Length: 93
Image (tube, rainbow, N blue to C red; front, side):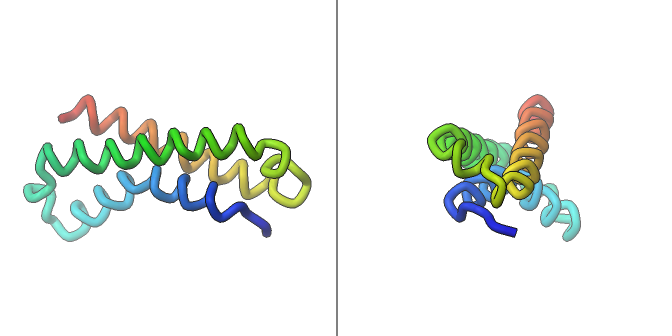
């Protein structure tokens, strides 16, 4: 399975919100997950999502080629899920 490293990093960072929230909930430290920290995580995640869109547009021909198509689709789904979760958290704050 081939993937573009820059695109994978951007998508991974956009999913930062999911992993951060999971760690805080799993270790029962959600009271330490302050509003400022939530805004920071959401901001970083949103910037990474925008970067992933830029990479996706600039390298569309490569990312949707035969070798990369399945990985690209999976990374797109992860990024969209992360942005939906960011919106959910932002409304909750």
